[in-house]
Amino acid sequence: MGSDYTTLSRHVLTQMGGFSADAYDISALMGRIGLAGKIIARQLSRAGLVADVLGITGTTNIQGEEVKKMDEFANQAFIRAFEQSGLVCRLASEEMEKPYYLPENCPIGRYTLVFDPIDGSSNIDVNLAVGTIFAVRQAEQTPPEDPDRDLLQPGHKQIIAGYLLYGSSTMLVYSMGKGVHAFTLDSSLGEFILSHENIKMPDKGFIYSVNEGNFSQWSEGMQNYIRYVHRQPGYSARYSGALVADIHRILFQGGVFLYPGTTKHPHGKLRLLYENAPLAYIIQQAGGKASNGKEDILDITPQSLHDRSPLFIGSKEDVDLVLSFLNG
Ligand code: FDP
Image (cartoon, rainbow, N blue to C red; front, side, top):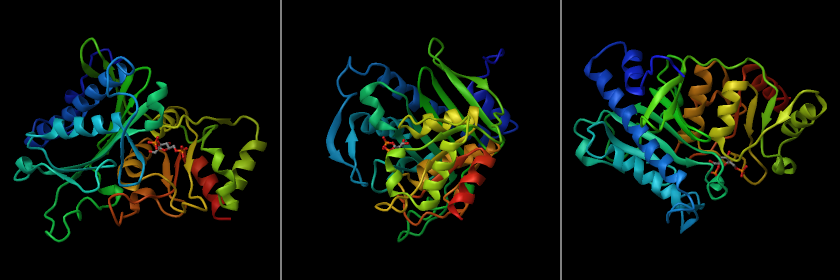
């Protein structure tokens, strides 16, 4: 625990290098993300005791996946946190087909927010870790016929990216391009307190994280990589079913997370804009690497809000090794 109890807002102001209007806006914006995270964490902690935490809503999202009650709750928590904030004009998330406009913020809202409200939602009903992923970009003037244009930008246009992990404690991890910093929620204070500053991940690890149930549907290169780690002493498989939790482990301990394309789904399962790109930003800021097998994740321009892409992310040497198998 940071001995001086640095709060999230104070840390953001320090990162912004002063007390300018921009610094206060970004600090307020991060405060709103933290608030939504606290509301979600509180709701998750009461799963099984109050209605509307466990189970499904009975509807499907734009990707055709069942919407869980917590997906809906968390999506609304973010929308409510940004209403009347004057900060964000548009939000886009996994749970919404189109971006959500907050017209009251639009004249002055200079930022856009993309987020995955609950990542790993199949874990909710069995009380395992889940997360929220987010990224902020500068809003730009967009033509009425192409209102999504400034959301469909490559990951290196993100000005802030991060995630919340609802695990044995609730953590918020973020980067504004000046290193990766982690905060732990002190629920008695109701504050995120700096717990790990300037996280640097190992260049090489011994964890590989992948759903091996898909083995028969992978390319030969991908199968050969997995055969290789099976033969090497020292590797451990870890896969929780929640991307945020698996990436969090790799951020601290090194290793590689893989979600390749399959014969049925060549682009894999994970979404570029609000899953892969924010996590790639964090991992690269910590000294790691993220690729879709061919290109750096942060260089890819999404063609639509819900585009998917394969993901190979983690310690530099591990990702390079995977790429060498994939590319022969
Ligand atoms: P979920 O669908 O439960 O939200 O975001 C997609 C995701 O979870 C990731 O969090 C997780 O790593 C992955 O899907 C799990 O997918 P598989 O069940 O195909 O392994």
